[in-house]
Amino acid sequence: MPGQRSITEAEKLAWDKLGGAPIHHDQMAMVANIYRAAAAVRQHLENSVLRGSDLTWTGFVVLWVVWIWGESETRHVAEEAGISKGTLTGVVRTLEARGLVRRGAHPDDGRLVLLRLTDSGTELMRDLFPRFNEEEAFVAGRLGDTECRRVAAGLRQVVLQVEEQGAERRAALLDGAEPAPRRSGRRPRTES
Image (cartoon, rainbow, N blue to C red; front, top):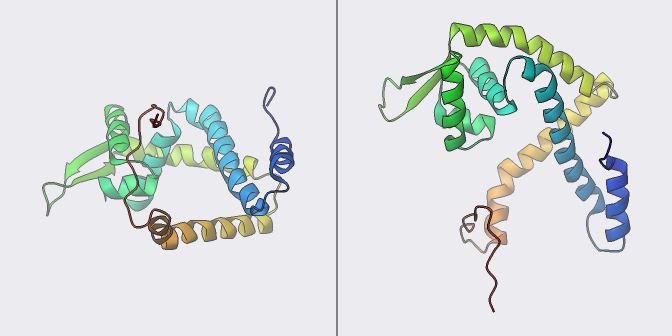
């Protein structure tokens, strides 16, 4: 995109800045490229196929999760979508107002809420997903099928590493303490 540094330029600048530092350069490049690729794909899909359906990325992901898994507890939908339950509440409110999802009480536990697609939500996903998938093919266009499978397998290993060992690693890094709460938009106070 005009006005933005290319991914190869960013990698070169990082190497120039950190080349002599005793860090894991290849791993740094991999993680940075995961982030950049995810952001680029998300932006492309939101500005192409999702915009025509008046959906945000998060709205689409919530619809996808419920479409694939079927009626699900909100906590599971939030977890699968990679969002907080608070964020899910706002997304569901919007999708519900559009008649795409419906909330319902759990039959065994009144404290739990279930989400399911309406007929309109199911129809939207059946219509939208083939166009979404065409754009997935577009963004992977420089890779062949074998390379796509290798990248997908490698990324699954990254996810498994974090899912299976991340909690233990974080606990070790924090000496067993809970992470400090985030400060919303404020800079950390410094001692004078």
